[in-house]
Amino acid sequence: MPIDSPNKDIQPEENSVLICQYRSCLAAGSAEVLAAFEAIEGINYKIVGTGCQGQCSCGPTVRIVPEETWYCRIKPSDVPEIVAQHLVGGSRIEAKLNPRIHIRFSF
Ligand code: FES
Image 1 (tube, rainbow, N blue to C red):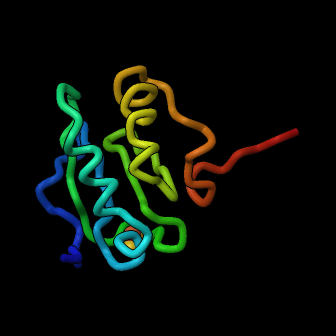
Image 2: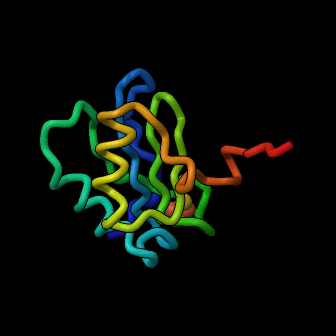
């Protein structure tokens, strides 16, 4: 079932993983991504399915708040790496960052 509005229960200071459950992302497999996050225990983040996050062309969109890290085209198989490297290890996964939001400069 698509969610058509952002989840208003999220507090900015609360560590959360927001997984879009709206049309484009659902068509690209975001329900399975949400399920993969929900299956992992023992992480200090709230896992939340949300409405559209405005990045429909590169879903499934996974957004980590309050730090504002945006991942794009996430598959269920990416979830263990995101959990281990980012949520537990504290390091972003550069190759999966949304390039529309995380602009990379090369000189
Ligand atoms: S449908 Fe997921 S970001 Fe818009």
